[in-house]
Image (cartoon, rainbow over all chains, first blue to last red; front, side, top):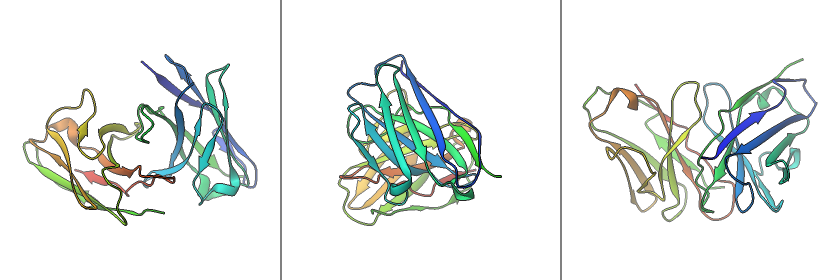
Length: 118
Length: 106
């Protein structure tokens, strides 16, 4: 079955860029939307955005100007960049698949904690 | 953006109880409502999509329903492994696809 694994630096300095990769195994990324979601400690889930395998992306307006997603079909990977980070960007970041094009999410990666601190 | 108001924020129950969790959408979202279960230190897991369709492998004691813009997750005959945090997500129309704030079932 499809499995997702997030990877990237666990510590990012304020004002710098957070960069994460989601590697998909057990299936192709082609033909699906891939989503990024984050969760600050003890808080609810926040939808960051999604990208289709063709590269078309939608972002949450709350983060729109700071977020970029990309896809690398040759590596079966999707990537997330968030610029000008602050402590408010500290969270567990998850990637998740939209299996049917109706925006429900399954499966999810295990998540990766990113801390913004100097 | 569509706002999702989830209640209660926490809920105490016992094994064998039946519990309900509610999400209210700020506007009509049709049946585009999904429910997730999250255990400590783990990623969310899809339980129900399209308001009432059970994801494959999810026990039948979980059920979902809709009344207008109100959505309910019901867990019948609670089992020990059901104690977790539950979140709703609307997936209607154009993004962003917002989540409720979660309900911790203790």
